[in-house]
Length: 206
Image 1: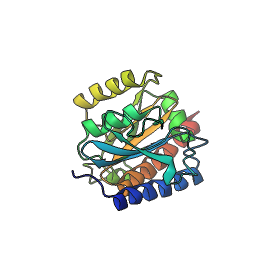
Image 2: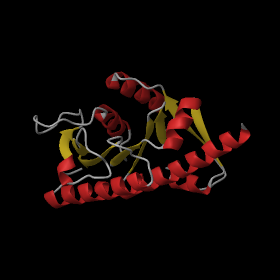
Image 3: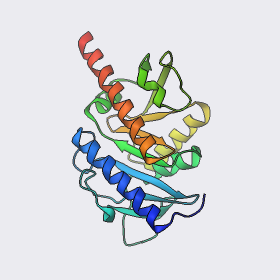
Image 4: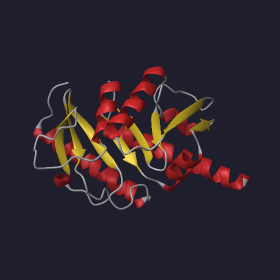
């Protein structure tokens, strides 16, 4: 993949800014929660800087880092969870955008379950490799860990053994990705809808 031109960098930022505004409107990225990135080249990504509200992003809210998580501008701080983005780009060659959200539904489900089973939803067809609703998909849940490299290593080991279309961190939120910002956004929207359905179903059983 060749390096992104300045106009492409601005376009990626604008697309993630729009995603942030939509996600905040829907209550999926409260306060400064969440983080977004887009792959710019084989060895670089554009990622949200630490501390930015995702519903109030501007182009200044992003910085360029390599795929080891080191910012080009050493005076700026990347998101605390940058290594999770790096792991996805290294493990998923088709991934060109990673979006992380903190919705009520994904937070509660990930606190209650070891994995989330999604079955017979039409929106499953938005996930990679799926062409029918008549399928069962497991979204794994990983224990939260403040040691991000250790958490990234656990995710990576799981991905080496299983097909993973997205994942959850317990009490912390969703990581989803796609080959474009738009595709990643669509997958987040689909997953968040299905998570809300699952949460309501669980609550109705109580």
